[in-house]
Image (cartoon, rainbow, N blue to C red; front, side, top):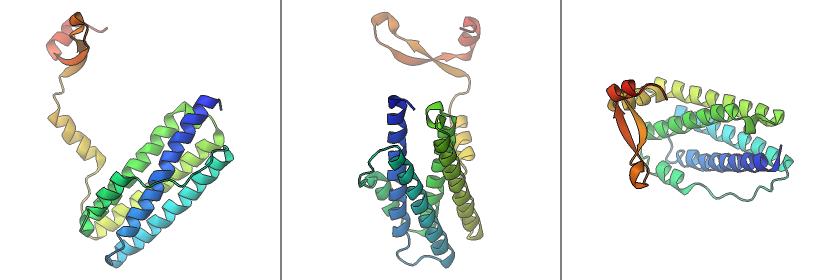
Length: 195
């Protein structure tokens, strides 16, 4: 890999490692006070999975010659975790985080810079599979406990319904030197033709 992509790869993997270490702390905090036995078992499995993935990331970063400093936890993430007071909201927090992590790995596997090294590509695939497995396990526990989660698809479709479907964005206001984005109604878009 060249130096630029090396830097991008290292930054992304360091950020991912930092988030994993933060999730270990967040999931650990959910073990107090004593949760339902099934939830406690799930959290212990998730903590173990996050720790083992962090070891793999750390090893890969060291193989690149990147020094892995003590990473500070993500304060905003810990604040969100500490605001969850009941089991339902904690499990929804876990589900959302795992869902985002699995999506992140999918995105990285589509990025040429991240997949230029076959070892990194294998690592990303393996970690993505682990996240998907953890997500599935979390959904199963939530289902057994009767806790509904909102799949990302439902959330996106709600946003899509709230957003006008017949508009597109274009640059406007360029006459006075400023650039802003405005909406073009569908009728004007058809009249303009494809550009």
